[in-house]
Length: 482
Ligand SMILES: Cc1cc2nc3c(=O)[nH]c(=O)nc-3n(C[C@H](O)[C@H](O)[C@H](O)COP(=O)(O)OP(=O)(O)OC[C@H]3O[C@@H](n4cnc5c(N)ncnc54)[C@H](O)[C@@H]3O)c2cc1C
View 1 (cartoon, helix red, strand yellow):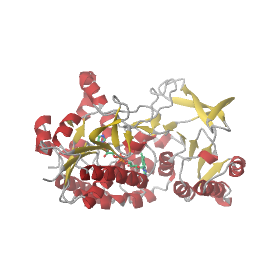
View 2 (tube, protein in one colour; view 1 turned 180 degrees about the horizontal axis):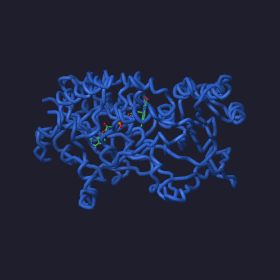
View 3 (cartoon, rainbow, N blue to C red; view 1 turned 90 degrees about the horizontal axis):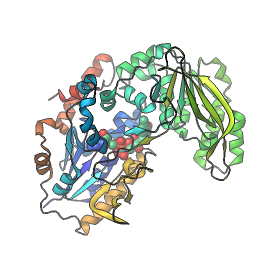
View 4 (cartoon, rainbow, N blue to C red; view 1 turned 30 degrees about the vertical axis):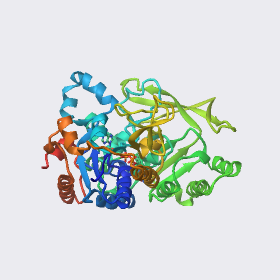
């Protein structure tokens, strides 16, 4: 009898794991459960629209989803801890939020384990963003997480269900981004790119329209540590310094010092020389826009506008020094304050804990040994037949290639356990058992053929707008396509 595997999530980790298993196991059947009607995780809803080469990863992922031993079940999700909580409080939500919300088809981990030989958790690590933890942070309309900004330009339906941020770029000349990682760099590039460079992408039409009338001239990327610790990769820095009409401003004395003061590996040396190249570019003065790298600063206080206290007026930053032993940022007495009409918070992500599954809150991961989920209640033991991969396994860091290598590790663990005959389940009735126990109708599920029809509709809408696709923002609209 063929063994059946349930995979939760359909991002790169889930699909690279699936392709590895299909290649190395002659009969395995894999059912992929995805909470969104659309597959591909952050490749669809995270990767910037102008990163077309990165989005090419979807080609191989599509082949995996179409494999005859794979079944895609979109719009079905594993219950999370917050959903259990939310269900109890749903009647407190406003009518407009409820209207945007869909009926959720939820499955429980116990049900999946009962009906499959093994279960793999690949639900990612970017459900929430890390906060600054400063008073007033949640009250300002113009303090938005980079996650929301990305969700806006990438038409992420999950975000749409919560709230649709209104980015008033027509009246905004300067944007401050707290964070110096790749997501911060993506946001800066989207804000400073010539609009024509974005027209031929699948960026949301709303974002395109608002960016077309944007008055943003300056983007400041603020990092708590120094140039040698910057988390933006060389390729993202290169893209920023090659923007046709935006110049880099950064403290070259500080960058040169970083070059001399530390033993840097090759990628870091490359990043430092790119920053110096950009900051010393003689054509800088001819450019009408600017992006700044501000080092060794941590936000310390948020100041409301005197007339409208729900609007952030300015931010005070503490000047940091680096502890020479730990390389941690330590605040000094020195501070600086500047006004900002829009503040994006981009200091990392956190995973969503899953109902009934161990979760390490500090590391924001499911505890595991090489992909086998650990049982917290029994020291050092693992939960048989339960695996984890991707950002939920490693934490939210690294790029798609890292997720792929990590998925291969978990896949090899599973293959090994199959070889040892450790994953027997005589009662395995897979999807048939799960849908029965979870009261889910086939018509509620988006299978691969239905997803292809949604994709075709998006391409049709894109064609009218002169773009490759206009993604549907609302789950209800996607589900409207039978
Ligand atoms: C804004 C942003 C931009 C990025 N840009 C790049 C880039 O340009 N190049 C690059 O190489 N890497 C980039 N990355 C990194 C890359 O996206 C990650 O390395 C990769 O997506 C991690 O894969 P994953 O499968 O673990 O998670 P994800 O891609 O997050 O996939 C998780 C999947 O699980 C689903 N899911 C979540 N909860 C549930 C549930 N309860 N039940 C069922 N399904 C669920 C989600 O909908 C999603 O489809 C970017 C990341 C971000 C955040």
